Length: 446
Image 1 (spheres, rainbow, N blue to C red):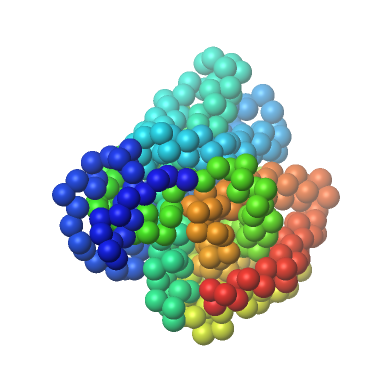
Image 2: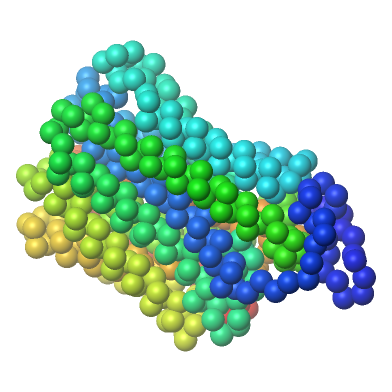
């Protein structure tokens, strides 16, 4: 753990000299939870937009552009396989970039991570197609997707943990959900961009060059987010808050040996939410593309309405969690998601009305659960493990709950029927309830 020095009696600890020039001429200042929330939202909004641009392209573009030799189902399954690579690479990126932060500084780590993210994103926008360079195009796509995952792990800046720890005791649920608002906002914008392109371009133009524009936008947002986040975390006030809570990298081996169970339980506690995440965003889009005649742009518009519902429900989740506790909120939503899973086949096979209900109800449940899914076990880590533990918990939650959800759901529904999607979602809800029953320590923060 990093060594610290103290500026005098009662002063907050200041990171050792390798933390950079941010501590020079430091001044006393007050950073409110609202200020921290702004940093969290700015940082995550660009990441989610980038995330959903790739996710939507995995359904609408990549099967035809990179896997034209396969039928539509196989091409989509191949595309979803590469989609999952980022989630596998993410914890590797977290560990590698923690070492970079230890050696240099948080600012340098974040700069390299977001530069890698932007580079991978813009390279994808310029990739030649399979018809131009053959399998090399697939290899390059996979490499860039892995690079995105590594960068995603490296972009952890500690601000979500800082927000959770500095929120007023009676408003912890409210502040916990603020960063989660970036998810529906990112999807709303990404889906809107693709819907606009589909409505205004011929199919051939969209597949040749139109799909590349959202990746350019994602790159531009990454650049803006980089400077915005650096401006926040490089100030002396943020530095002192981060250091005061010991939000610095810790040895991964020691963390796993001493608090590995906290990482696993924390990841599984939100399993239902993370499983539902892709079952209302990516999977239904692929299912409609393959098995329904409904215009995809029209379905994207319904999903955009669903994202609006999710955003509203995320806000509501903060109020509910502050009334009944975060653990109770997550457990109740896991039960509701389990009930919802039973109706998945009926709704998706229920024509346009049923499909719309599936999207709107699903997004609503997602908002209520996902709003409290992050940072639920931050306080369970020893202070010196909190920074690294929170990052790895998030990585594991995405890997176990969301990475393979589109691939598994589409594969099961195509070969065995939609009933197996119900079982898949139900298993996530059961996993969440089991983890929550073990994690009584959540009540400490509640």
